[in-house]
Length: 213
Image 1: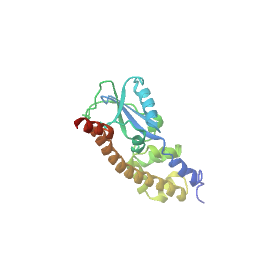
Image 2: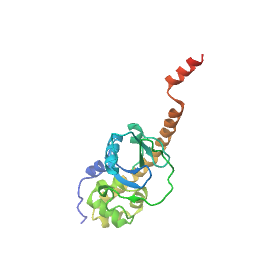
Image 3: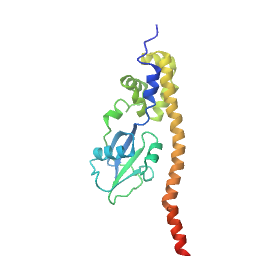
Image 4: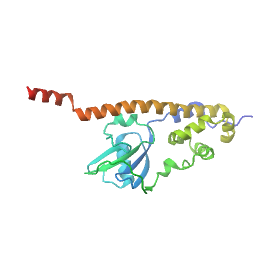
């Protein structure tokens, strides 16, 4: 007799497809304090990030990508960034600098990372049993590990029917596929964002041409 499924496949996919809320990493300008938050909008990221990093939300604040310093100031751009993107919060005259390693206080949000520090399969399954929505916080490597694992053995470990387990693996694969597509779109948008910032708006260009005549 197959183990009883703990919910319909519709509810599984509905939970899995709740992509509005995404896990993010927020660091202060010198990367000495690192936190994890979940946010569905750029504004929510700023509010939660300031709270976690003990920053004044009323001061002049810029949010940039940790990897290259690209400023994130549009909701549309934020919505296209992959899960677990790392952001630096810069205040006043603080400037982005390339990361140089060194010690830092990594203090993750336990609501996001509990049970996910280890990449072993046992921890991943325990996290899924606790809350299927945790699938959204898994790294690409963890998602791939679940996809690659034998379905029948995974079903046995999860205590679920194979049909349920296949749906979980399909959800993991969709996240992997969508991450690849999102990265492509984000790269194009990043190039557009930089080009627009460096060249100025069409109205500014027109004024410059008019002034030169």
